[in-house]
Image (tube, rainbow, N blue to C red; front, side, top):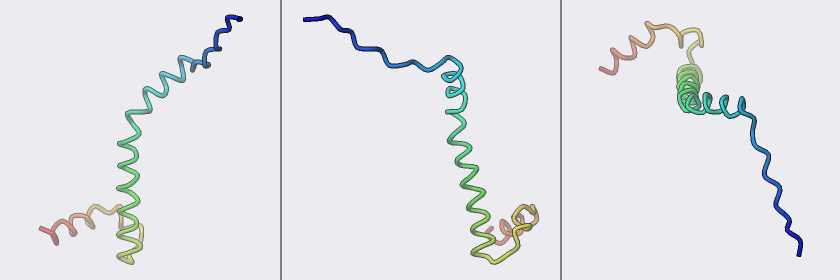
Length: 69
């Protein structure tokens, strides 16, 4: 019987590990910001039938806040 060792799986390079370690904690906050942006645009432009330029107007959101509270 021959003694064969399994070949080890190729390891990632150090720079790839470091890059992934930096990017991984940023994925959830970036996904939340993307969801916020998509929700604002979808709600204001498609549901509310308003121009997209008003989505980024601070007065729009102050007015909405005043209506709710």
